[in-house]
Length: 386
View 1 (cartoon, rainbow, N blue to C red):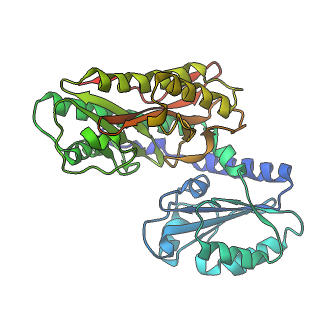
View 2 (cartoon, rainbow, N blue to C red; view 1 turned 90 degrees about the horizontal axis):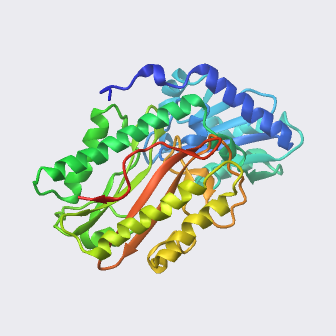
């Protein structure tokens, strides 16, 4: 594996222009007046789809960005004053200060005399930003829309290439954990998370896609938790959830393993989670409803006998879109979702089992839907007994 990112892998301007045209055409077809997209430092895909710019973490407006796209106008990006020069240097269209948001949106909206404005990112836009947009639109309707999420869900060849590299870096992180444990030294949860992060960075990752999670022993029965200084002990079940970010695209990979001599109950948990995901991999194909695919994994978990110990078995959902963010809005693989899955959609399929007092894990694969089934992007095995 190369040790440095290959800058020729980056999304080229022509692809950004194609995306703008694609979204504009979808807006025109839907009868909408335009799209207002929000993204922040943690959930930047609604912005990153149109530009390399991604907001920076912080408590001021540096953490936020808003994009306006009318059906017959060029996009306009709004960012913090402090990020204006940076955003302008990597964006193909005009960038303005967030201070100008209300006035600019009022003028732009007036050019579209009829139709509703769609809002992408409605679930996490701050009230202070939303209030300024609503003030600009006045009586004009602003409605949450899945239009952008559904377009983003289908990945281009360039995007798939970046996601394959992010997945390979994630596999390398798991291999580094395996190799460290094989040497026989003792490690804490935090030690192993750091080993994973170092392996991803050494391979060319920009950074981890999210805070790497390692939970061992009784702590592996928590669905989600940060690593601590707890040392791994022989017989532990260990849950990991690790992913790499590579040139703007991410992998989201849950794995678990038994460490040292482990009882049959713990090995059965590992096997049950793997079998459930494998059932989903076998069923996935273009044309299947997201709810139908979810039911396959959910039913496998129920039949395994772990229903009360699995959030997915109880209806939380067994997968989610991924790409520029670890979790993207579409496709959501869950109960009641009537989305028809399409070729080149990328999403995770997952099964979590957490048994208090015993332990647990999450088994997860990132897949691209192909003409006849799936391409598994992350190759590291799910059934692990170390």
